Length: 104
Image 1 (cartoon, rainbow, N blue to C red):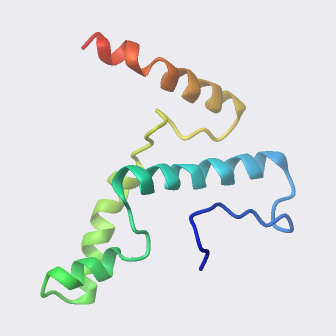
Image 2: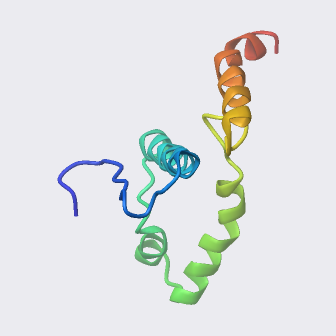
């Protein structure tokens, strides 16, 4: 598709700054997960089928079962920053993360 990983925003689909902020945040979380966990977003079911002798339906069920835990993993943020207020809180939590973990 593209020669290197990137985020592409289509200006004809984004008409407000708040919408652009949400899209960029969403895509950056995917980028973080891709770099941290080497997630290949298009191959989950095929990967399972390659190593297990199960049906496509069973593989899809496995992917569906882990979806909620993956969806609720907000790292590197403590929350999904939907607006300016959430973004400020998320950044503050991120900036102070070492202080929290140092006290454990």
